[in-house]
Image (cartoon, rainbow, N blue to C red):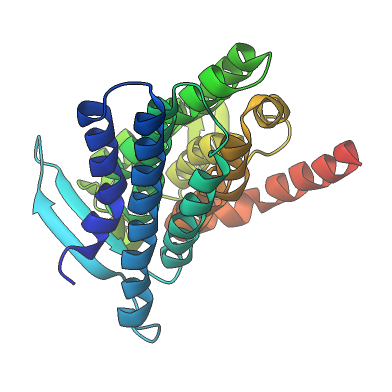
Length: 300
Protein backbone atom coordinates (compact mmCIF):
# COMPACT_ATOMS: atom_id res chain seq x y z
CA UNK A 1 0.00 0.00 0.00
CA UNK A 2 1.54 3.28 -1.15
CA UNK A 3 2.11 6.00 1.46
CA UNK A 4 0.80 3.67 4.15
CA UNK A 5 2.64 5.50 6.94
CA UNK A 6 1.09 8.83 6.00
CA UNK A 7 -2.33 7.16 5.89
CA UNK A 8 -1.85 5.64 9.34
CA UNK A 9 -0.44 8.85 10.78
CA UNK A 10 -2.99 11.32 9.47
CA UNK A 11 -6.19 9.26 9.38
CA UNK A 12 -7.02 10.21 13.01
CA UNK A 13 -6.25 13.87 12.24
CA UNK A 14 -8.64 13.85 9.27
CA UNK A 15 -11.34 12.39 11.51
CA UNK A 16 -10.61 15.09 14.09
CA UNK A 17 -11.06 17.82 11.46
CA UNK A 18 -14.35 16.27 10.33
CA UNK A 19 -15.52 16.16 13.93
CA UNK A 20 -14.48 19.72 14.67
CA UNK A 21 -15.85 21.29 11.49
CA UNK A 22 -18.94 19.35 10.54
CA UNK A 23 -20.36 17.95 13.76
CA UNK A 24 -22.48 20.53 15.54
CA UNK A 25 -24.55 20.55 18.68
CA UNK A 26 -24.41 18.96 22.13
CA UNK A 27 -27.54 16.84 21.89
CA UNK A 28 -27.53 13.09 22.42
CA UNK A 29 -27.31 12.32 18.70
CA UNK A 30 -24.26 14.59 18.25
CA UNK A 31 -22.52 13.01 21.24
CA UNK A 32 -23.23 9.53 19.92
CA UNK A 33 -21.94 10.44 16.46
CA UNK A 34 -18.75 11.92 17.92
CA UNK A 35 -18.03 8.77 19.90
CA UNK A 36 -18.68 6.45 16.99
CA UNK A 37 -16.69 8.48 14.49
CA UNK A 38 -13.70 8.53 16.84
CA UNK A 39 -14.00 4.78 17.45
CA UNK A 40 -14.33 4.00 13.74
CA UNK A 41 -11.35 6.22 12.87
CA UNK A 42 -9.05 4.71 15.49
CA UNK A 43 -10.16 1.17 14.64
CA UNK A 44 -9.59 1.78 10.93
CA UNK A 45 -6.14 3.15 11.73
CA UNK A 46 -5.33 -0.03 13.64
CA UNK A 47 -6.59 -2.24 10.81
CA UNK A 48 -4.47 -0.39 8.24
CA UNK A 49 -1.43 -0.63 10.52
CA UNK A 50 -1.71 -4.42 10.42
CA UNK A 51 -0.58 -4.25 6.78
CA UNK A 52 2.79 -3.11 8.13
CA UNK A 53 3.22 -6.49 9.83
CA UNK A 54 2.27 -8.35 6.67
CA UNK A 55 4.74 -6.46 4.46
CA UNK A 56 7.56 -5.84 6.93
CA UNK A 57 10.73 -7.84 6.26
CA UNK A 58 12.52 -8.47 9.60
CA UNK A 59 15.61 -9.76 7.78
CA UNK A 60 16.07 -6.52 5.88
CA UNK A 61 18.24 -3.89 7.59
CA UNK A 62 17.36 -0.24 7.66
CA UNK A 63 14.07 1.57 7.35
CA UNK A 64 11.10 0.29 5.37
CA UNK A 65 7.93 1.87 3.91
CA UNK A 66 10.00 5.03 3.41
CA UNK A 67 8.18 8.11 2.12
CA UNK A 68 10.07 11.26 1.20
CA UNK A 69 8.79 14.53 -0.23
CA UNK A 70 9.86 18.16 -0.47
CA UNK A 71 8.48 20.18 2.41
CA UNK A 72 8.98 23.77 3.57
CA UNK A 73 12.10 25.93 3.99
CA UNK A 74 14.25 23.26 2.34
CA UNK A 75 13.18 20.61 4.83
CA UNK A 76 12.07 17.11 3.89
CA UNK A 77 8.92 15.25 4.83
CA UNK A 78 10.36 11.79 5.43
CA UNK A 79 8.80 8.84 7.22
CA UNK A 80 9.69 5.19 7.71
CA UNK A 81 9.80 2.40 10.27
CA UNK A 82 12.25 -0.28 11.31
CA UNK A 83 12.29 -3.06 13.88
CA UNK A 84 12.53 -0.50 16.69
CA UNK A 85 9.72 1.85 15.73
CA UNK A 86 7.22 -0.62 14.25
CA UNK A 87 6.18 -2.13 17.64
CA UNK A 88 5.55 1.37 19.01
CA UNK A 89 3.35 2.23 16.03
CA UNK A 90 1.34 -0.96 16.49
CA UNK A 91 1.07 -0.38 20.25
CA UNK A 92 -0.32 3.10 19.62
CA UNK A 93 -2.87 2.07 17.00
CA UNK A 94 -3.96 -0.93 19.09
CA UNK A 95 -4.51 1.03 22.30
CA UNK A 96 -6.33 4.03 20.87
CA UNK A 97 -9.64 2.26 20.05
CA UNK A 98 -9.61 0.85 23.58
CA UNK A 99 -8.91 4.33 24.90
CA UNK A 100 -11.87 5.74 22.98
CA UNK A 101 -14.09 3.00 24.40
CA UNK A 102 -12.99 3.97 27.90
CA UNK A 103 -14.27 7.52 27.28
CA UNK A 104 -17.86 6.36 26.67
CA UNK A 105 -19.00 7.60 30.09
CA UNK A 106 -17.78 11.16 29.46
CA UNK A 107 -20.75 13.48 28.94
CA UNK A 108 -19.21 16.96 28.93
CA UNK A 109 -17.73 18.47 25.76
CA UNK A 110 -17.59 15.03 24.16
CA UNK A 111 -16.77 16.28 20.67
CA UNK A 112 -13.76 18.25 21.89
CA UNK A 113 -12.65 15.27 24.00
CA UNK A 114 -12.65 12.99 20.97
CA UNK A 115 -10.89 15.58 18.83
CA UNK A 116 -8.12 15.87 21.43
CA UNK A 117 -7.50 12.12 21.45
CA UNK A 118 -7.58 11.85 17.65
CA UNK A 119 -5.06 14.66 17.26
CA UNK A 120 -2.93 13.09 19.99
CA UNK A 121 -2.91 9.76 18.13
CA UNK A 122 -1.60 11.42 14.97
CA UNK A 123 1.17 13.15 16.91
CA UNK A 124 2.19 9.99 18.77
CA UNK A 125 2.36 7.89 15.60
CA UNK A 126 4.35 10.68 13.97
CA UNK A 127 6.99 10.49 16.70
CA UNK A 128 7.67 6.85 15.82
CA UNK A 129 7.55 7.24 12.03
CA UNK A 130 9.37 10.54 11.45
CA UNK A 131 12.75 10.23 9.74
CA UNK A 132 13.54 13.92 9.77
CA UNK A 133 14.76 15.56 12.95
CA UNK A 134 12.58 18.66 12.57
CA UNK A 135 9.52 16.55 11.78
CA UNK A 136 10.25 14.39 14.81
CA UNK A 137 10.54 17.43 17.06
CA UNK A 138 7.23 18.86 15.82
CA UNK A 139 5.43 15.60 16.54
CA UNK A 140 7.27 15.12 19.85
CA UNK A 141 6.42 18.58 21.17
CA UNK A 142 3.02 18.80 19.51
CA UNK A 143 1.76 15.94 21.67
CA UNK A 144 2.01 18.20 24.71
CA UNK A 145 -0.90 20.36 23.56
CA UNK A 146 -3.73 17.79 23.37
CA UNK A 147 -2.54 16.05 26.54
CA UNK A 148 -2.38 19.41 28.32
CA UNK A 149 -6.00 20.02 27.31
CA UNK A 150 -7.10 16.51 28.25
CA UNK A 151 -5.69 16.91 31.76
CA UNK A 152 -6.63 20.56 32.17
CA UNK A 153 -10.25 20.33 30.98
CA UNK A 154 -11.41 16.81 31.83
CA UNK A 155 -9.12 16.05 34.76
CA UNK A 156 -9.70 16.00 38.51
CA UNK A 157 -9.99 18.72 41.10
CA UNK A 158 -6.40 19.98 40.76
CA UNK A 159 -6.30 19.48 37.00
CA UNK A 160 -5.06 23.00 36.14
CA UNK A 161 -2.02 22.69 38.39
CA UNK A 162 -1.23 19.19 37.09
CA UNK A 163 -1.67 20.23 33.46
CA UNK A 164 0.67 23.21 33.71
CA UNK A 165 3.23 21.21 35.66
CA UNK A 166 3.17 18.48 33.00
CA UNK A 167 3.48 21.01 30.19
CA UNK A 168 6.26 23.12 31.70
CA UNK A 169 8.43 20.18 32.76
CA UNK A 170 8.28 18.44 29.41
CA UNK A 171 8.51 21.61 27.33
CA UNK A 172 11.48 23.06 29.20
CA UNK A 173 13.25 19.71 29.00
CA UNK A 174 12.93 19.80 25.22
CA UNK A 175 14.43 23.27 24.80
CA UNK A 176 17.93 21.84 25.16
CA UNK A 177 17.12 19.16 22.61
CA UNK A 178 16.13 21.89 20.14
CA UNK A 179 19.48 23.61 20.68
CA UNK A 180 21.22 20.27 20.15
CA UNK A 181 19.31 19.70 16.91
CA UNK A 182 20.51 23.05 15.57
CA UNK A 183 24.09 22.10 16.48
CA UNK A 184 23.69 18.73 14.74
CA UNK A 185 22.37 20.41 11.61
CA UNK A 186 25.29 22.85 11.59
CA UNK A 187 27.78 19.99 12.01
CA UNK A 188 26.26 17.42 9.64
CA UNK A 189 24.49 19.75 7.21
CA UNK A 190 21.26 17.76 7.35
CA UNK A 191 18.31 16.87 9.55
CA UNK A 192 17.82 13.48 7.90
CA UNK A 193 17.80 10.90 10.70
CA UNK A 194 19.28 7.94 8.71
CA UNK A 195 22.13 10.22 7.59
CA UNK A 196 22.67 11.48 11.14
CA UNK A 197 22.82 7.88 12.37
CA UNK A 198 25.83 7.38 10.08
CA UNK A 199 27.45 10.70 10.91
CA UNK A 200 30.35 10.72 13.37
CA UNK A 201 30.10 13.64 15.75
CA UNK A 202 33.32 14.90 17.33
CA UNK A 203 34.56 13.09 20.44
CA UNK A 204 37.69 15.14 21.08
CA UNK A 205 37.98 16.74 24.51
CA UNK A 206 36.88 20.37 24.50
CA UNK A 207 37.08 23.13 27.11
CA UNK A 208 33.89 24.96 27.99
CA UNK A 209 33.74 27.66 30.69
CA UNK A 210 36.97 26.33 32.13
CA UNK A 211 35.75 22.73 32.26
CA UNK A 212 37.14 19.95 30.12
CA UNK A 213 34.35 18.02 28.40
CA UNK A 214 35.45 14.43 27.77
CA UNK A 215 33.74 13.10 24.67
CA UNK A 216 33.51 16.56 23.18
CA UNK A 217 30.50 17.44 21.08
CA UNK A 218 28.97 13.99 21.51
CA UNK A 219 28.81 14.47 25.26
CA UNK A 220 27.11 17.85 24.98
CA UNK A 221 24.59 16.53 22.46
CA UNK A 222 23.93 13.45 24.57
CA UNK A 223 23.25 15.56 27.66
CA UNK A 224 20.88 17.82 25.73
CA UNK A 225 18.86 14.88 24.43
CA UNK A 226 19.02 13.25 27.86
CA UNK A 227 17.41 16.32 29.44
CA UNK A 228 14.37 15.89 27.21
CA UNK A 229 14.03 12.12 27.27
CA UNK A 230 14.66 11.83 31.03
CA UNK A 231 11.76 14.20 31.72
CA UNK A 232 9.55 12.31 29.30
CA UNK A 233 10.17 8.86 30.80
CA UNK A 234 10.41 10.29 33.56
CA UNK A 235 13.61 9.64 35.52
CA UNK A 236 14.51 10.83 39.00
CA UNK A 237 14.79 13.73 39.88
CA UNK A 238 12.65 15.18 37.03
CA UNK A 239 9.73 12.84 37.68
CA UNK A 240 7.61 14.93 40.01
CA UNK A 241 5.15 15.98 37.30
CA UNK A 242 4.05 12.37 36.76
CA UNK A 243 2.13 11.62 40.01
CA UNK A 244 0.10 14.81 39.63
CA UNK A 245 -0.60 14.15 35.96
CA UNK A 246 -1.65 10.55 36.56
CA UNK A 247 -3.88 11.36 39.52
CA UNK A 248 -5.59 14.32 37.88
CA UNK A 249 -5.86 13.00 34.32
CA UNK A 250 -9.09 11.28 33.27
CA UNK A 251 -8.91 7.50 32.92
CA UNK A 252 -8.32 7.58 29.17
CA UNK A 253 -5.61 10.20 29.60
CA UNK A 254 -3.82 8.07 32.19
CA UNK A 255 -3.94 5.08 29.85
CA UNK A 256 -2.31 7.00 27.00
CA UNK A 257 0.18 8.65 29.35
CA UNK A 258 1.36 5.38 30.87
CA UNK A 259 1.18 3.15 27.82
CA UNK A 260 2.50 5.41 25.07
CA UNK A 261 3.69 8.90 26.01
CA UNK A 262 6.16 7.73 28.67
CA UNK A 263 7.58 5.24 26.17
CA UNK A 264 8.67 8.11 23.94
CA UNK A 265 11.54 8.86 26.31
CA UNK A 266 12.84 5.31 26.08
CA UNK A 267 12.33 5.32 22.33
CA UNK A 268 14.35 8.53 22.10
CA UNK A 269 17.26 6.98 23.99
CA UNK A 270 17.27 3.96 21.68
CA UNK A 271 16.74 5.92 18.46
CA UNK A 272 19.05 8.86 19.08
CA UNK A 273 21.26 8.75 22.18
CA UNK A 274 22.80 5.29 21.82
CA UNK A 275 23.39 5.04 18.05
CA UNK A 276 24.19 8.70 17.34
CA UNK A 277 26.41 9.33 20.37
CA UNK A 278 27.99 5.94 21.20
CA UNK A 279 31.14 7.33 22.81
CA UNK A 280 29.17 9.70 25.03
CA UNK A 281 26.73 6.90 25.88
CA UNK A 282 29.63 4.82 27.14
CA UNK A 283 31.13 7.72 29.10
CA UNK A 284 27.84 8.74 30.70
CA UNK A 285 26.40 5.27 31.29
CA UNK A 286 27.30 5.46 35.03
CA UNK A 287 25.14 8.59 35.30
CA UNK A 288 22.12 6.65 34.05
CA UNK A 289 22.94 3.69 36.30
CA UNK A 290 23.24 5.82 39.44
CA UNK A 291 20.10 7.82 38.71
CA UNK A 292 18.26 4.53 38.25
CA UNK A 293 19.61 3.12 41.52
CA UNK A 294 18.65 6.30 43.38
CA UNK A 295 15.17 6.08 41.86
CA UNK A 296 14.79 2.48 43.05
CA UNK A 297 15.84 3.38 46.60
CA UNK A 298 13.79 6.60 46.61
CA UNK A 299 10.58 4.95 45.45
CA UNK A 300 10.94 1.96 47.76
